[in-house]
Length: 185
Image (tube, rainbow, N blue to C red):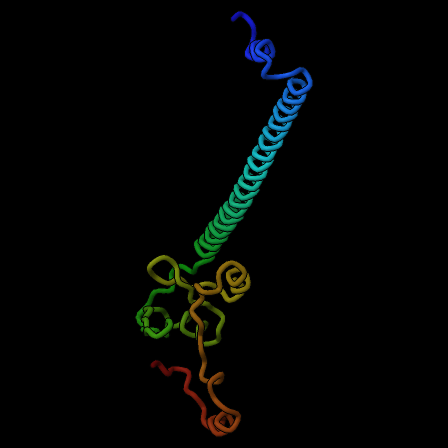
């Protein structure tokens, strides 16, 4: 019993050479086909893995790009706020305090600044601006308005005059009456 199973079957007469060669060829073809299928399956798996990796890399690059843009916008906003703070600090008026209570509307709230007469006249002529600065207010020359509006227009307290709210008919009627200069509300 030293030979292979094939040799043993051949000696016993159960299998002839023709039949044996045919079975051997079929077996070789099956092995060859299985190897080819395994290779294709391996390639398919590698292709799928490569596609998934490429997609993940693309998504990561997109997220990184969005985060970068967000950081840049935040940095630009911080720079604008720093510029605005510097403009207000360097140009705010000093020595405007006085005995006259100047009332102004900041949104829906009425606020009061105690100012002197010179400052009151400048505010009435719209030569000065009131801006929000920290937790209080600062006065600036009106020529700084454009610089401030470029950075953040929301810090300027708007001086809403009566003229902007009146119709043409009302303006004609009220133009007959002179408003005294020393009127304080």
